[in-house]
Image 1 (cartoon, rainbow, N blue to C red):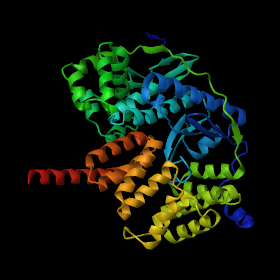
Image 2 (image 1 turned 30 degrees about the horizontal axis):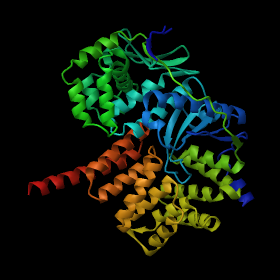
Image 3 (image 1 turned 90 degrees about the vertical axis):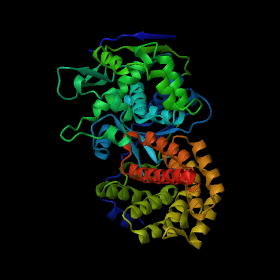
Image 4 (image 1 turned 60 degrees about the horizontal axis):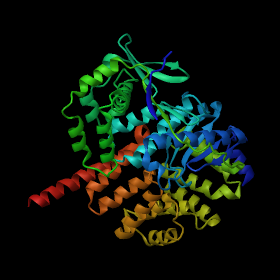
Length: 512
């Protein structure tokens, strides 16, 4: 059942000496898995279990009403961390509901990215639903442009689930002619941003905007990206909820973006090119009133997952990942946690891998090799350590005998998506493109939302001189990274330059 509703918007000593930079993580860490959620949290065992169940229920609802492909086949769990507010503010340093964080520390299975939440409920649940939608867009509508990626994510951010009744498209933005800059307020326990009506991005600009431009702030107006977000949300809202006659064409456009229909740009032009969509959009902005969708969905009962307490070493290693390596301060904190994780046999190899990655970040290859060697003594077949060793065994971009030997060792243990991607990237270097294709395809199939796996497949496709397919993968990478790309987007930009160069060469070859 589908209805529209309006709502009222009212070695121990050495370690002890060298680990003083970061206090040990508090006890009470738990590790919980459901079908699609892998949650680590220091909120206590029972609350972590209940939180994972709530997140799985929200995932089921959003997948059922908006992402049919996510209800079919096998999707790996989404990695989530829920921190108590004190730890969240210490590590993240921003008093908001949560963030999506990427990291080069993908040697922990699945931890090349995490949704990190400040507690649970309210704003944190909305952040989870927003970031979840990004993962589902990348899996179901991989060719989505940036405005649609963010518009859909923000649309599903405003979702509430009550048993089998799902309300979605609840207001995340409103507009006002009476304010000069964005402000926020709580409406029915939801965070809503009010943006100046005259500053909302015009549709021609929105539809043509690039990934970087979408998130860029205007000098002197740090909240200016809100105008793009508001326009993206409102356009998706208009097409999905605002006018019934627009929804079928929007559905055909989404089908094209899934890769099972016609060229998406041609579909958009066919469906909306002859309409004065800007006028309809302007009128819709003036009459936002809380209109949303309410659906009856047959959802499975909320699961009661099995939870386990995390060991001190596992908590320390996870804490090192959470701090990350992006700044000197965070690296020092991460290193301090990793050194404590060295004391536990089950986490010592991972701790050496983290310390090696930190050394590579600082371009200290000698120290990285030492940490890798120490780790491999403890775990000679660890795929993360072997993947890191490959990074230290390239001489001027050419494979050495040691590189080939390490790749051979990795082939015997590369089962996770990240390890398969590392294997494929190394095979590009050795020129084994058929094998690289097979392994990169397997990595993406196992984890369609793994940005590092997609990036590796783009590298393989470039080596195969398939710039069109490589560009597709790079678009998926940008959708997965969304507003949290950071320095990773620099690598994407460099690869796009290679795509453009290959396209120009192909055009010249065709012309001649």
